[in-house]
Amino acid sequence: MYIELSYKFDKNMPIYPGSPKEEIIPNTRIKQDDSSNTTTLIHFLHNGTHVDAPFHFYNNGRTIDQIPIEDFVYQTPLIIDKKLKKSELLEVEDLKKYGEKLYLADILLFYTGYCKIRKNPALYMDNFPAISEGTAKFIRTGLLNVKAIAIDVLSIESAILGPKTNFKVHKTLLDGDLYDTRPLLIFEDVNIGKILNKKIKKIYAFPLRLKGLDASPVNIIAEI
Image (cartoon, rainbow, N blue to C red; front, side, top):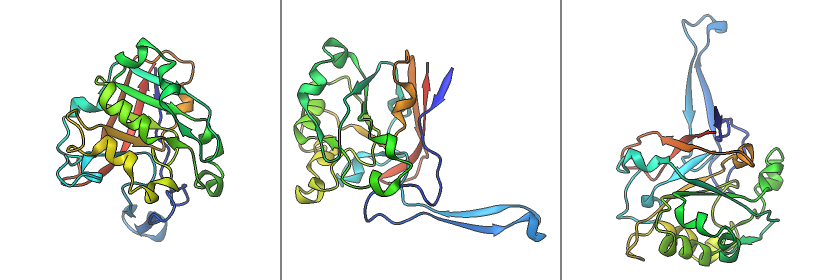
């Protein structure tokens, strides 16, 4: 059985504070006596369920089209279930509770429970929970099987602390010069709650191959 973890795109979906809004422009419509239905989408790559490539915060990093396709398939996913409130951060101790499973996982999916308020965009966008810089460093340097992380809020990094710290969490995960270990992929605004308490076989998360760009919309599928 397969379960989709990506949210549907629409012009009113919640977005990271300050990001450009979606524009959906009808070009032709059959009901207006045109020969077909066609549409233009003006889309900001970091809106909706998407994946960040290293190039997002590291100018010499791989762009979304340069990442091997196998890096978007995950054989040993692990959900980190830690309920967090507004502005709270996921810490290293929260991960270590998962013991040996943590070191075998190739993708970590952070379920904070904050996604339950996504239907109220104003609340969902307001100072959502995130992961700490220490947690990002622990994953990057200590969990060497992990290829990617995913979270059920708009960003892996606090919208308040990120700009103040020059986005240290993103850079810790993506910057190829900071550590000798591989940079990771980051999936944001993922509907992880749909697979809680289910036995997950694999996760597939294929992006559009956008040449030279920093991110992509992604359709994330869990096989259970």
